[in-house]
Structures are given as C-alpha cells and as structure tokens.
Image 1 (cartoon, helix red, strand yellow):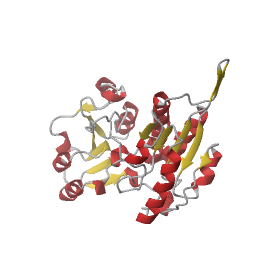
Image 2: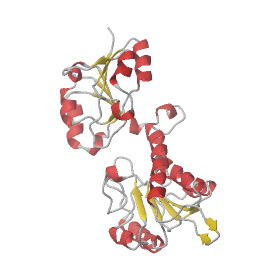
Image 3: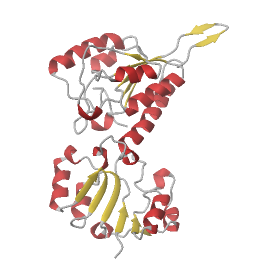
Image 4: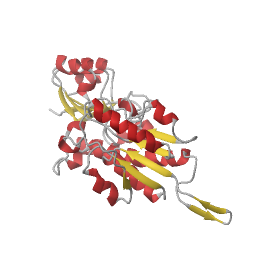
Length: 298
C-alpha cells in the first residue's frame, strides 16, 4: 500500500517557503507515494496549486492530517495540528521540539516519529540535507542587501569631481554560514567590513573573505562548530568593548545563534543608541529573540 504524504501550508507570519516543490512531488509520486497538498501551500513561493496537481498531487481534504503517514513542513506545525496527526506518523521539517514544551508533549502524545532537520550533523554524508546551511546562506546574502538599501551612505568608496566619499563601515556579528555569506556580500558591494565571532577559529575564515576580524578578547568555542553560552563576566567584557567599537560603525548584521537556546543578546539598547545617526541593524536572529535588544521581528 502506498505511503500517503501531506505537504502542509506554512502558518507562521511572513513565512513564504514550502516543504515540497512540484518537482519534489513528481519524485515522490514516481516512487509510489500518494501526495496531498494543502490549498495555497506554494502560492507565496510562486507555485500555484495547478502545478502541484499536474505533478501528481491531490488536494488535501479536511481530514488529511489525520490520515497522512508522512507530514512535510518547513517550520513546526501548530500544537493543534500535531494532536490531529495519525499516531506514529512521520513528521519532517525544522521542528525545534525543545523550543516549545507543548509542542514536545504533542509529539509524545501522538507517538509521532519526528525528524527535526535542524539537528542534522555538519558532515559530508548529511550535506545534501543540511537545511540550516542552505537557508542561512541565502539569509546572510539577503540581509546584507537589505542593509545596503537602508544604509545612510554608499557601501563602496566613490570618487567624484566634488570629492571622495568614504566606504560604509559594516560589522557582521557571528561567522557561521549566514555571517560568512553576509561578509562576502558586503565585500563584493565595496564596504569596509569587519566580522566578529566568539569562536577564535573563525578568524581565518573571516580574513579569507577580505574582512578584518574584530577581537574583543572573549572565546566561546563549543562543540560541533557552534558557540557555547558565555558566562556573565565574559558577556560583560564583550559588551563593554563592543559598545566602544559600535560608535564608528554604519551597518550591523547580526547572525549569532546557539542551537536549542534563545539567541544571545549581544547588542544592547544603549549600544544601539550610541551608534551614528541613521545607522542600520539587521538581525537574522530575530525569530529566536534577536541578538539586539531593540530587535522587533518583521
């Protein structure tokens, strides 16, 4: 008997992604699976329902969640949706079960088999399924373009008959996949770029992109290429030095994250107020609380 797969329409505010494209549906159907697609699931990604139907999917009915044996999503479904899932169903997506106790309880109550893709290890074998790296790379690129659009001055140095304009000073906080992509994008746009990360091994990576490593004298190297939580003393020293440096920065792009925990608060409201008038802060960690205390998701 064919496995029945359900592709959910994302419900999170501002979410435009979809867990499966028409091309993905074709592959699933070719493998013998039946695919249900919730109405409008791909519309925000410019993929209408007809494209899915032509690929072999069927419109999902009201009871599709209760009947599907495999559920595909980008972000975790609501607790109500999980509680309506078929017992022992497989749920695949960026599920973040530790972020919400009620969500974790819903998984357990229905005995669901969860595959939180954000927990995949950064290994060669898992590279094709590394959703964090692929999504973070695009986010870092887009964040810097948004910053360039909003910045109070041009990114590159411009020489005109009337004089020379100095390049924009950019600081990228966090040198993971998103941060490194943001640094590379800022350099290509001609800005004067610095990168900061509490992991000392990122110094070489930042320098390889032509940026300067901002050393605040604090190391928080952790396991698996991620950062660990800083102690109170380490955080205080980091913030004191960073506050002094931010007074001369035009653009800050925040990308720092700790897996399974709220985003570390690195830029305080006082630091933001101490920056130059018109300065821009783009915070990619807004969804988990933000690296800047003044961040408002949007």
